[in-house]
Image (cartoon, rainbow, N blue to C red; front, side):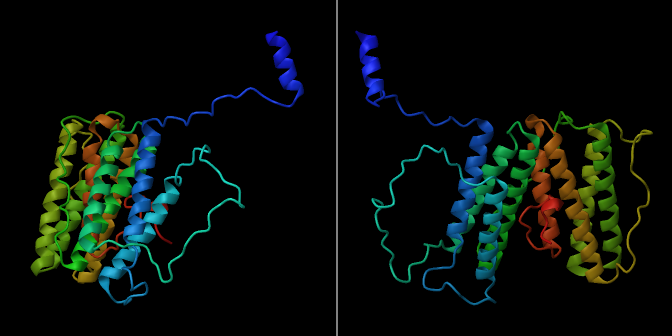
Length: 319
């Protein structure tokens, strides 16, 4: 009898009802991607021009910074793969779709600088946490860059608005060499940090005042990091220690502009080095590398570099 009924239903063009497919459960990597993407979408909306002033004064540093934040957020959405669509969303026919009501002159609700700075800081912390834990190294590198940009953007907006901004991360050397890092990569990092320290010492000798003090501080930071990494890698003062007494520096560093250009170049190069190490390192000890990427990028900005959309990722630098 049951077989007869099935045959009758099939002959009538009817089918037995089956439950709709369930949406896929995202794994750790997809969850991190969705979080970073959702934050980027939200930041673009919050950074929009304030209501009633969509054009604004192009010379206004706050408005200019907000536009940069929105543009960078759009780039982040693209590189993160866009917003997630399960394919299971309910659909309606064009004839039954409601007609949207548009209010004349309506613009997106923008946030105050204080609110936007706070949201940038929160989104940066979220991306940093995911960059320090996701199993995929290249994606961790992208998240670390996104986290750094959000932190730098928050600081830039706070400075433009004359309000308090977030502090930079305290870069702490790991207790052991992060797994996944090749000895050659560690040697290159030691050499790069030491060369930066030397470069800043030369800059400090050529400049005066606040610029000299800033160069002295950065020289100490980089020399200290070079020593820390050399000790961790167990190559300090051995035949494998890559540090040298003298490094090549460009001429004309008595010119403050040339000195600042060298400082920017050294910090941006180190940011790229740390980003590469993030991609190679095991998650357990990756957070210090993520913070070093952000800190070096912030130092480059302090010497006059613009906030890039993707700090530490030279392949995504603006043309």
